[in-house]
Image (cartoon, rainbow, N blue to C red; front, side, top):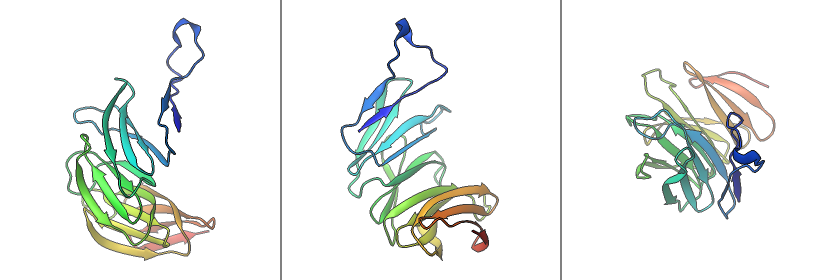
Length: 191
């Protein structure tokens, strides 16, 4: 229920060895950082729990927003997604994906077939905007353009990680230890 904030480039005042901590007082299920604020390249800290999403500005020591999330936060990613012109935080929960802007306003919502276990952003169709890659516990990788499902790829086990590799390629990892790479919908390799 705590997040330790560590900055190796900042010296402690008065010789204190204490690191600042955020007390969340709930089970933390996901942590991410990214440039969510408009007109800023600074990252904010995003903390997910089974009940809420908190966006915290570490540099300003303040909450940006605090939002109840009914389906919980299993994983999240920050970045430009689909036709939205500004950065979003996209959270995956129990059979749903939600995208919120820098104020916490929900601007994207869609249902998935299983509980979301991994998220990534990548420009799979090379049109200049990122698609949302969603891995789930029903062993599928789904690719969304905004809230529209454009591709569904069945796998052999729960998807635990997704990473965009540039171009039309992305990597994936499964609970059983399998890793591999797809280019668009074609599997290039797996091991």
